[in-house]
Length: 322
Image (tube, rainbow, N blue to C red; front, side, top):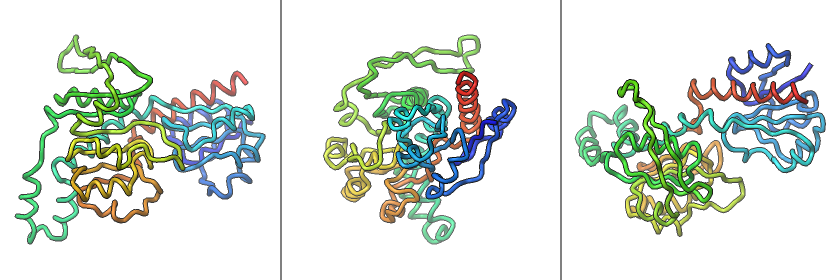
């Protein structure tokens, strides 16, 4: 019997599919430092973002035939080493795109209307500071009519663009591998003509960096690399720009972001991911102009269900044809 370890869990729908196909699926979490020993008893391992499948594990577990990642990126897996060892690596690039894109706007709405500040203060000092909070929150801004910069225009970036267009925003997108896409907007209120095609032409990196009111980043990033969004890039942005990172921790340098927040070059930041997780930079965590979420971009009920089904289908297909 094929044995599979879903070390970061798997939605029940995908687990049932795998079991119906005759596989044994274990969901007991194995600590990272015990994985080498544990994985010698499995044919496949499924992970999300928490578990890392690095060279040491891959080389110590020649029995592994497949590594599955529930999500878009593969930065927590040494893909090249796995391929050299003949291990198949699969992921689910489409399943969580809508959820991540919606979280981008959750952060934008939160920050532009100061909800992150008022929700922190009102439960404890709402009576004494109500007037002050009202003055602060009255400086909120609308998203309609503003320019949304999308740095990285793959599946998630395109979902961000759909929402932005629906809100009446101007979209500027940069991606070195994408020149033009035709977005399909689903607008049920239009009845039979609910699917509207909107072409989007990408622009230069400089255009996105210098002309956007808000910039969201959706690019790959590996631990140990230099943060692409550093002081030099931030200095080229509009003063008072809003930044959102729901992609990979480290894409934005937390040190440079903090300096830019303090100077006012960056008005606010929405962060779902961090250089270290759990995060340790308390200045970032406690900053009044930072909206926070605990790495949950793709963690909606709908996305988890889609991820588990897509992952299960790929696992079943692989072992069926192996």
